[in-house]
Length: 337
Ligand SMILES: C[S@@+](CC[C@H](N)C(=O)[O-])C[C@H]1O[C@@H](n2cnc3c(N)ncnc32)[C@H](O)[C@@H]1O
Image: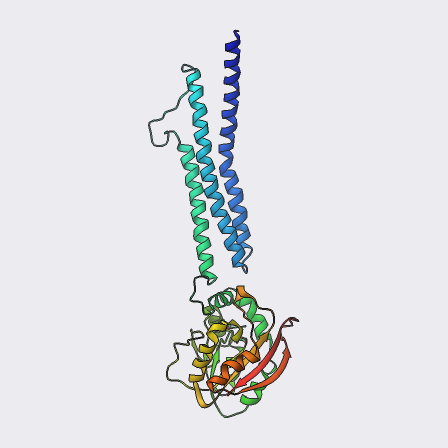
């Protein structure tokens, strides 16, 4: 064989092998996508209480599939160049498959894979936006993320909340309201209705504000006999309350969820809902803040600074341990009148 011919045959063999490798790579792309997407989606399904992590995983799944779609495009382009070379090398021996029907056209395999990758990317992106929405990222800023957290975790939290008897959770209120003439009471952020149930059972007329639908449903289930009016509303505006005025406003473990900037407006609004001798009972959570759950720092001093200009007098009842057993959290009870 002349030397030139030997080189040509070597080139042919080399390029055929290169083409085969590229072809194998192309068929591996859907498998890579399925492993990547499946793994990430599984991770999402197991991290229910970590929306930020879920959003990151879904973002990665969307970006990964788009990346593979682009890689596939480039890979098939390079393969086409090899095919062109092989065809020119030996027109007679080359098996072309131009195809004339919809399913036999060239690039059918690439297009099918790309559609699958695109669907996986779109699904991941939709799930990502939905997760952000459920986590309250697009909310109006007044406790949306906190409420989204309670919506998700209501069932698990309810067990602990309901274990604590009212008199143990609120000895001050228990003294003020137990066996006393009926009062009108507003419970803001009423949760599972544990406190509403006690107050209603003690003859008081109660309006309960609870923005998390899961808590409202649980309250109806756990305390079916508690006669109270439940409203879906939230601080700082409390828009659903109009003419009613209350002898007591109860805010147990809620103030830390109100953004510090919203607190003056929230307290001013609460004051407008009091009868002339009405009082606001607040429990303050002293512990590490948690921006993901919208838990901001609170203090008696801050509350006094907001309350005094509004004409509210603050009475303090000392510090208490956390009844759910968290060593890093302490509570202070205050009454504003
Ligand atoms: C820690 S739980 C306390 C529930 C109940 N008060 C208790 O002591 O068991 C906090 C409650 O505040 C509610 N919440 C959060 N942000 C709120 C807001 N901006 N206005 C009113 N309630 C809010 C939540 O939905 C949740 O029910």
